[in-house]
Amino acid sequence: MDNAQPGRWSRRSMLAGAAAGLVTPMAIAGAAAPFTVSAAAQPKGKVRQVTVYAEALPGGLFGYGLNPGQATIPGPLLEIYEGDTLEIELVNNTDQRLSIHPHGVDYDTNSDGSPLNDSFNEPGETRVYTWHTRTQYRASGGFWMPGSAGYWHYHDHAMGTDHGTGGLAKGLYGGLIVRQRGDLLPDKQFSVFFNDMTINNKVAPDTPMFEANQGERVEFVCVGHGNNPHTFHLHAHRWADTRTGMLNGENDHAQVIDNKNLDPGGSFGFQVIAGEGVGPGVWMYHCHVQFHSDGGMVGLFLVRNPDGSMPAGAQEAIDRYHGHDHSAVQQAQAQAHGVTPPQFIAPPEVRGPNPDHAHAHGD
Image 1 (cartoon, rainbow, N blue to C red):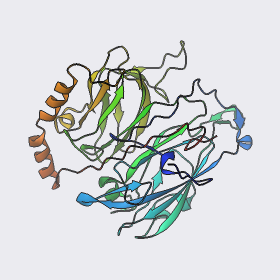
Image 2 (cartoon, one colour):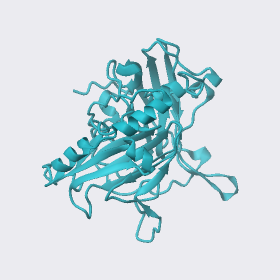
Image 3 (cartoon, one colour):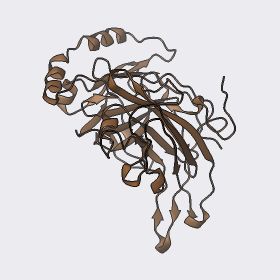
Image 4 (cartoon, rainbow, N blue to C red):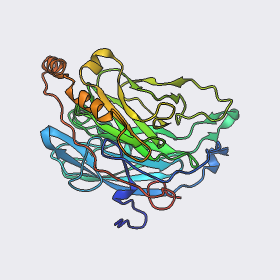
């Protein structure tokens, strides 16, 4: 049961992004028309409130969660519309200094989430961070200023160093989507974080296996962290290199791709139709830097039959994947960096209702 209080998001109001965190919001037909308001005429959006808990996890890791004892790596996928404000009450249930710092949205120095501006949580401290968004608007001189819509992310900026290097390495990160009203909503969402030589702080064959039925609209949110440049490649599917991954019409000649650079601090997202033109099956997603994929930066995208059943040959492919031996490369890399292979805590499954009626998106 959803026990949401007025003006505050419940656990169901978030979209968790990882292997077990699939969402099924209702799709909304149509595409958003560009906003044409001036800065002074920016519409007043809604204020959304959510409590996020930072907690220690097994193996020396940390995560963000929507309820005590439910922290995950990556943290919950937060999602709002342009024009809305998000107030995050961050509860630090650890013995470490930490924070939450966003990309792609507006905030003042108090909500910067960095020690530079004395914006962080001491151990046991609760602090509110406020993020604002805006629609695009016409500026002086006839120029247009961009809105906040995009695939963004948030992360710690205070654990270990003043840049949050320790928190990032140990799992304190998550996805953030700012949509334009009218954007198509997916049936399922997957968050993929290339964090140094891991995917969501895990290496193959233990990386997330994402699942969808053939014909479902799925959304990938891809983020880079750490010290290594990467590329994200998805087998058998392609998308337009646009804000949403879709073309805006028959005369939209945006480049169509199936591989994109994913550097530390960078992010992008896209939507595809699972199995469109290729049918059901097991498809890889991976970093296309060869020694990265050889070292375990690879996962699976299982496209089931339209009725949800397993397609022929899929289980055999999954078994072969689990039989791949990345241990020698992983061990050599671990020894070179003086670390042990990272662990992974998957988010619980979270399903959301119609976002226009009951949760994150609101209207």
